Image (cartoon, rainbow, N blue to C red; front, side, top):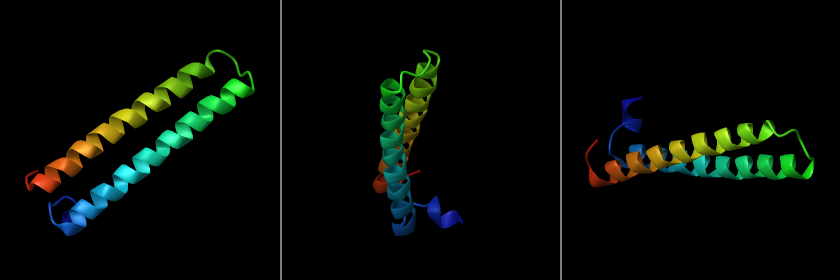
Length: 75
């Protein structure tokens, strides 16, 4: 499975796929926050939404950096 860590076409395609998955997780996080707001869930549920959003943003940021590094040809 070393080809997904290389800066070749398969590695770049895999990184782009992971970036798309991470971006789609943002949609899930915002949907959770909106649903929790509409259903008047307890206040402690705000932390679950915020934590999920922060984790997804960090994941997306790191994957974009990894994709850019692969596009530059170094790892």
